[in-house]
Length: 202
Image (cartoon, rainbow, N blue to C red; front, top):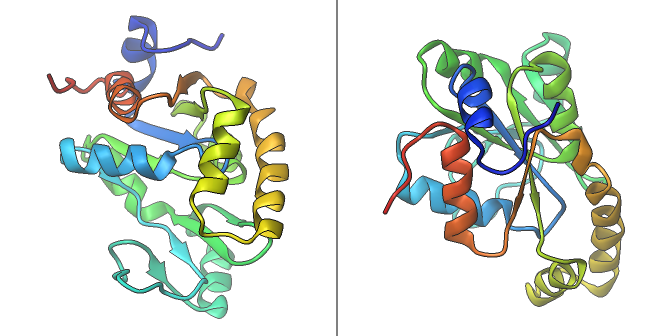
C-alpha cells in the first residue's frame, strides 16, 4: 500500500533500507529546481548523470550535467543492457541512466536520487521495485500552466504540446509511493530529503 508525505513508515520501511529514490512529475513542476536545492544543501546525496543524444548547451559540462553521446553510442548502451532506463523525451532526443554508476553508489550505501521522466520511472520500477518512487505535483493546474508559460523558453506551440503531455503525466500520480506538492521549493526539497532518511536542515 502506498504511503503519503513524510510519514515514519515511508522513511523507515522504504528509503533507509533501499537508498535509491526516484523523483518524477509533470513538465515544469520544478524537478530541476528541487534537485538544485538538494545539490546545494545536501552534498551527501548523489545524483545520477544521464546519457543523452541531444547537443550540449552553453555552459554544460560533459560528465557533470550529462554524458553527451552519439546515437550510435546510445544504441550500443541499449544493446549491451547498460541502461537502467531510457526514453525519447518530447519526441526528440534520447535520455538514459547508466546502470553501473547507480549500482556502484547503492553498493557503497550512498543516498542516491534519480530525477527522471515518467517513462523512465516506470522502467526503473520494473527493474528495482523496492526503490522509493516520489511524484512531484504542482499546487494546482493553473500554477503549472503559469510556471510553464512564464519561463519564456518555449514557443506557443511547444507550450501547448508540453501542457498536453503534463495532463497525461498528472494521471500517473497513483503509480508512485509518495506525493510531494511543490508549493515551496525549500519545504518540498526538505520533505524529499526526510523521505530519504537524511537529517533535514534547520
